[in-house]
Length: 221
Length: 187
Image (tube, rainbow over all chains, first blue to last red; front, side, top):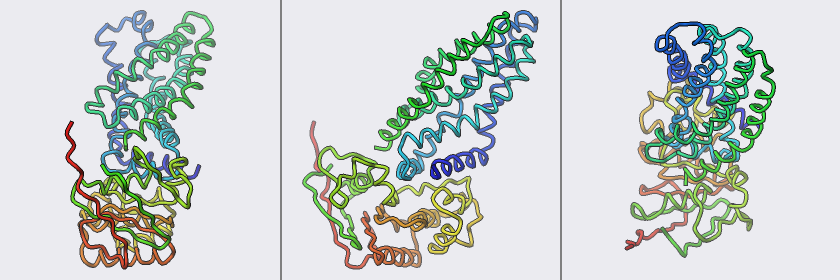
């Protein structure tokens, strides 16, 4: 556990030192979402109707941005060998990386999603459902992304392969996340959708680190 | 890569791997570390199979690859934070004569200094087996002598060393294992 926290602290410190990389995902999220009112016009009824979809799709794409460097830098400079020899199982190394990705990318996206939803004229009653859905949603995105990043590690053109691999897997998260916000704005209960999102999160929590750990082991061989 | 290879390293012993480029020295070290898996054969520690419990095996070895694994964005001391406490870091940096550079960003280090920082990682916390891939590459004579002192102290405490090298290493009475060039395979 101490080693796990030490690895998490190391990754957070590295992200802090490379602040521009860390901020890039958040800025991408804001800029991409801000393009929609320009493209489809500022009419509140249209914009408010599709705002949950905009926020979710932009969050999904922004969470992908830092993934190709999640293990890439460590593989290139030999750190990954040492991390796998640190006494932690490979799946725990992957879990620490996923947690670091969520803290550095997922949490800022979550914090920015509220103001963004207001900017897109989303109905007030739907905003809590959107944010409640994004909470498990961003965790699942980090976990799936970590598994994908570990699997394409060492592959030629891994950066292109990664979204092709991860984006289809995120479809259920997107569907239930947007459905929760839509249900809330239509006066229905978002609860079933949020519960399904939580279930996805509960399934991804043990499975994704295991898959990512296997990917890491085969990448260093 | 190689077959029919069998050797044992006793406590306090040292084994130097030699052989031309591409003969499998680094691969053998990675096998010993558990990073790569052998196609056939066994790797035993006190008679027990190491491949059955890789994290436990990893905890008793220190691996120095041919890459230094130094993060340029962190300071010299921060590069070691993951591996040990601050007292151990000061001692390890003093052992490789980097203590006065402890707060410098690692991107300012020269190649030899980065190598010494990677070597400092070995001495941070004790582990019985050191696997070294070209440990003295790029080091000056004084640093090589310091590495020799570290290796001698490690072996005096019952530690084992397996090193792959082209350069003469400061290792007294080490056993040598010469790997033959890899056979040309035709498909």
